[in-house]
Amino acid sequence: MPLFSSKFAPKSIPVRKVDTSVIKSELGSDYASRELSLEVPQLKIKLGDFEVSFDDGQWIPASGKAGAAHKENNRLKNELERLEEENNMLRLKFEILLDMMTDKTVEAEQQAEMQRAQSLGNLKQKNKKKW
View 1: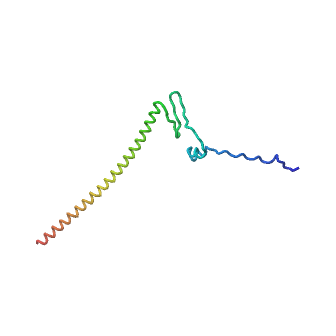
View 2: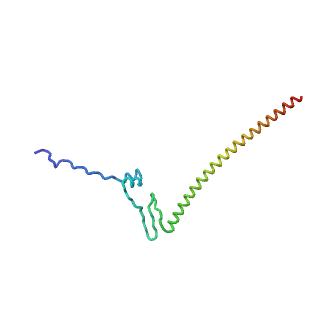
């Protein structure tokens, strides 16, 4: 009879289940749902006539006056971003055109100055020949 019997043998370790919270926190819930085939429905709460849904970490009103106002606010926010981008582009174009006009003005003034100097030089040469 052996000194150590089978009752002292270690138990087998159970297979670990995949912890989805780590995957969700590191890679995002969209990635986790695709890779792990998790179908997480959108969380909605309805209190009387008021209904809200949880989307991208925020509670969004889904019905009633608050829902309509939220949709209108999102539309206006998108319109504001578009207009700000357009305004920035127009400012950039204005600055470029202003720089181009300044360069052309300086070039034209320098060319006019050179022509004046040449014409004065030609007049002096003509006056010297007459004397």
